[in-house]
Figure 1 (cartoon, rainbow, N blue to C red):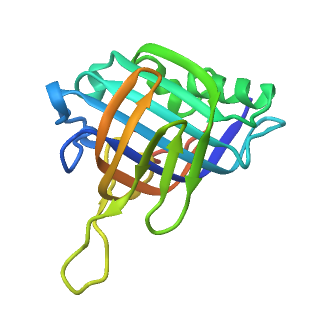
Figure 2: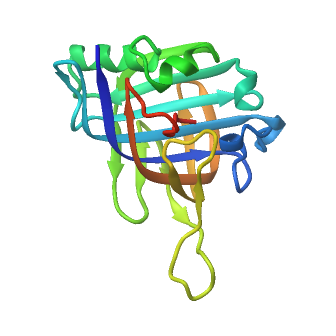
Length: 205
């Protein structure tokens, strides 16, 4: 079975700037943990003949230590207009049952909190923002060198939702599936995941 998802994401966590998770460093959130939320606009996607285009998906995480130490706690919220087939397709993808990057991560899950419907919105643009039920995050970029008009990015990280992503702040209150935090760090980029990921392609974080 083949699947793909592509679009834009925005993520927030309570690590201090800049979150070390993409380099498998120890989290810098309270108690040495990382609580985070990534919201993905699925502009184009499918699992075989199940079309996922037009949905929004949120991934909430709790990392008790650096990523490769495992024991992750993760859960997924999908747009409340998702059909039963769409919900089931995303659930299988995110549990790692359909191959691709999330199959690799499945061995690091300590607890999968489930996949459920909810109100998930995504506002694209230079400063994307998202909401998941009553939770929210909004990206605020960090400026590049003075006078350059550019923004700060991270490139070629060991763990990333994209090959290169903009980094900054993402304030907001998050309480999703029992994982709650005040957002500090943020990142955003276009992404593309697939069941057959190219060698060297980003594999998510």
